[in-house]
Image 1 (cartoon, rainbow, N blue to C red):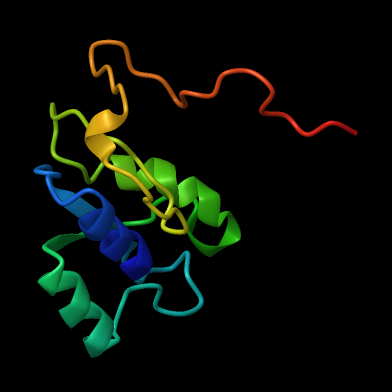
Image 2 (cartoon, helix red, strand yellow; image 1 turned 45 degrees about the horizontal axis):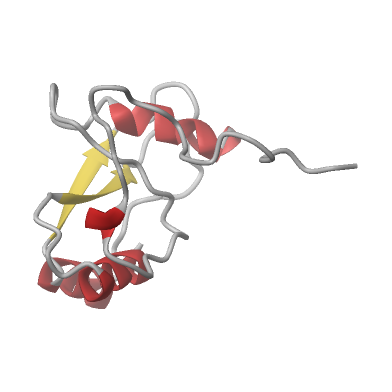
Length: 118
């Protein structure tokens, strides 16, 4: 998440939106605390103007980490458009060049040829 934030700030310096890092909170669905505790990482995220967005794992937790993306959506500000990136994404260009259409949401700009070929 820190590399994502740094690459966004570097490659898209005019980005004026809010940047959240959604962080699951400890609870019965996690064997270990999944939240961020590293002070250096938290300080670096703060310098990059990242907002930590805590959320509760009610259904998925550790058993199905990908499902936590669904639960993180509930923590986003209601009624505001958003783009969801995985934390292992690197931004290499200006996001203002991506033709986001918030009036017609989609999951990806790449709609064909996305399944692996056996």
